[in-house]
Image (tube, helix red, strand yellow):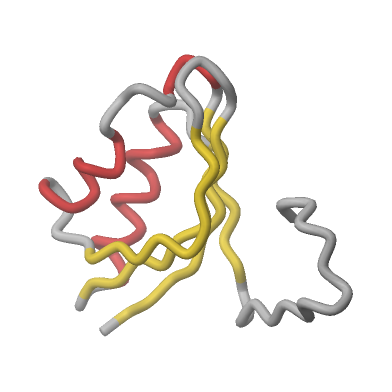
Length: 91
């Protein structure tokens, strides 16, 4: 199983569209939402893990998001949060 962790930044115009639904339905991706802040009419931010048996399918799903104006940042490492130092800035 290929897993990728990504940060998705949605422009305000896209927050009411069902883009993550299409990742599941059209690209057969399993999604695990790690953190989300999406408010209709405002910018949204979503941190999630995508998994599928094929890296090419996962990449096609990410290209789908990019083609709709979502900014996709891949995380190359595990997130470790020190709760004693964290100020919940969203980074």
